[in-house]
Image 1 (cartoon, each protein chain N blue to C red):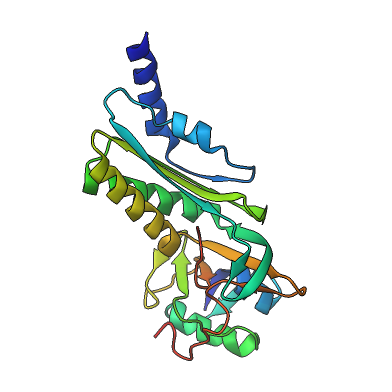
Image 2: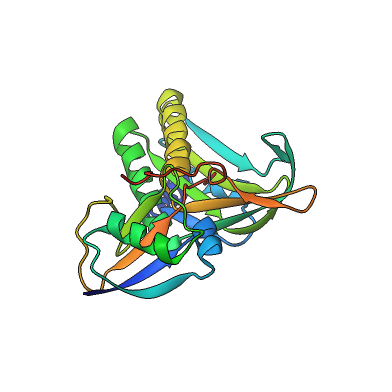
Length: 80
Length: 161
């Protein structure tokens, strides 16, 4: 069981109703973690072009997660 | 004296990098940072808050920025532009917080010996900023509702697969 810090931004934060949470999970990667979190948060929809960062680095959805990782879920960006 | 002033400025520009600002941007001051005697021109892009989007009347915008990664990724984009186009100086700054119609939301500037590479580098930087930086834009509409740009109506069952 890994202990992870999960953070949500913009639309995801509003849909989940909080900016972050501590999660204990067996998820192997961000993709599995997101799917698991969707069962807890009904409003957490998968969006086209959403991104994930692990420990402040943009990451692949299949990147292996380690105990203590900070996982940041980014909805589609819209700078400029 | 003029040469000394320009050398001083050049060392400043190197340290400017990419920034996020919670206060109004000052385009004239941004341009001044890129002055260099070796450069024959400056190309700038200013992104402004527009009063409409996709048929809706927009009253104001709110930018949410995850600063640690926005700055890191912004620096990366600037470095890529310098290397790729061989320009002298590059600078970019993006606003965070609530902005009114007409305010400057993003400023990009490139100074170089010749204009062609400055235009190309400026275009590259603003395009990459829009696609890569963790910045989100919430529009507040006439009528009282609001929406996150690029996020609404894009639900996807396997978006991350």
